[in-house]
Length: 171
Image 1 (cartoon, rainbow, N blue to C red):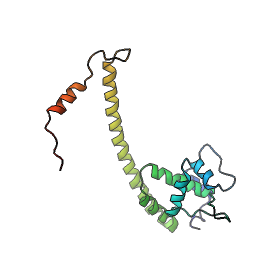
Image 2: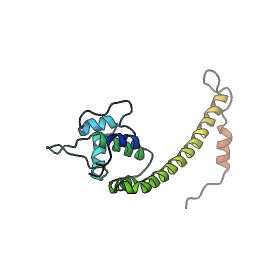
Image 3: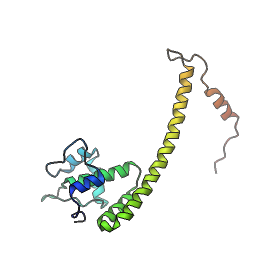
Image 4: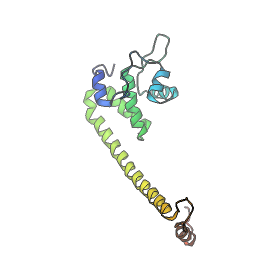
């Protein structure tokens, strides 16, 4: 087993607990239970399994059974996916995990690169949010107490400038 040298407490330190406000499950969970706990669909968990991200143990009848180990790793993979890491990145990360502890520098480098991408996207989103807030403030400045315009909203000059600008040519 690729993770046999890592105990659950080490996994929690490395990846965060499965659900910070909940104790670990007392028994391995079914795919439906795991999906509910992680906030995803069973289809997502089956997809991650088919993609080879985790080797999920099976019960005698072939049903997947998710222990704290799988749930903890899945939670981290879902964080990576939620921050925009593609499936190729997830596969690369898990391949390095399976190779063993000697790949820790490569895993760290992969995560640092992803962190930088996420931070760049956050800066872009902050700029977009600032533009939205500025526009809301302009509307607030022009609306009366009852929500009706007390004077014209300043979209007029923007629209006039757009109408006066030469049309863009699509290449």
